[in-house]
Length: 417
Ligand code: NAD
Image 1 (tube, helix red, strand yellow):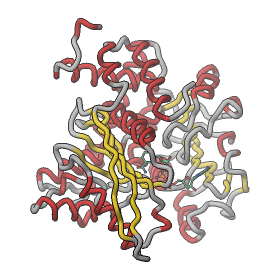
Image 2 (cartoon, rainbow, N blue to C red):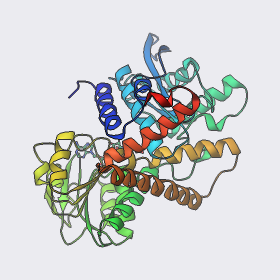
Image 3 (cartoon, helix red, strand yellow):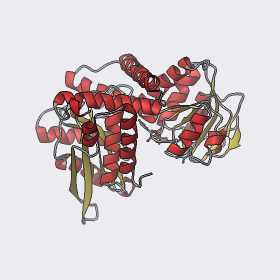
């Protein structure tokens, strides 16, 4: 297996392209980004010294539309990470039927060590120095280290530069600054819709039990919707610890407890205490890893008891674990499908900004459901057609959409297949 995240993405590209018989010119075009930028952002710090930060922006592929994606601000940001995530977002947009290209960007900085003034200067500097910007070129959104407030600064800076309003040019904005409804709950809501489809098609009853790793934005929202449907939550863990009660845990009561205890479920009195990773091995029908990557690996895959794994986090199941789980008959809903809800709702945010027509929450939910359920069917249909896993089905379905667009645009020739 390859060494860095970008090489891993290319490895997956080659595997899926082989299984799906994808045009070799398309594969070659997808082996590197269309454009990549590295630039500096000088910031006068509060103590008077000048700090020079390095920023990255990758336009991986715009075959399906303008670039749209997050800006990550972390101390170890680098170009390989931006390339890997940009490629991955290209695939996710294609899986989700989103008319946008994939990209990613970031700044090498530690927001926790900066004052608000310094951080605002950094974020505004990112927009000033970003070489290509605007609703039809590159729409930056939030990621680790960025949030509604930073996105409002980005929008403000861009509009000051342009001299006119441009709400469709920045994503993940607060609702009050031309943002969209469901922004915060988009991914968890999408996870719920996809879980429901997998359950329906695979004979899981509405009462099927589930366990959540991660009680953050994604896990908690998905869990609340599943419980409202009749599913029984039996275990939850977060970075501080875990809890289990096979009789059932009321997620709303647990939420109140977590809100009062630093966001953590640890110590919840109506359940027994378990370890963070014990959660992956508890008795349950559906397992939702919604925390971090690679938690299900060669060492614990054979102890997983769930029959359906919903990859809410990015890459929670390693390729080695996946082989073990498939042999046990476990169904895995791939990350690119399971968690594409926020990418879909971001594209709705841009549409609303372009049309100046801001939708009610019910409309956003209905349109998300329609889009993600369609993506689910495309994924499983491709998997069935080729006799491959849902992950390969999702990737091949995405690559086929990119292949078609690239051929129609004249980037690749059909007869090269
Ligand atoms: P969050 O920060 O709101 O919550 C993360 C949760 O995971 C917290 O409960 C935290 O305590 C727990 N956690 C962190 N490290 C852990 C560990 N090692 N073991 C067990 N629990 C741990 O994050 P989120 O927005 O809910 O995102 C969850 C995952 O989904 C992340 O991997 C994120 O990259 C991915 N994701 C999020 C979105 C989104 O829109 N928020 C979209 C796509 C993918």
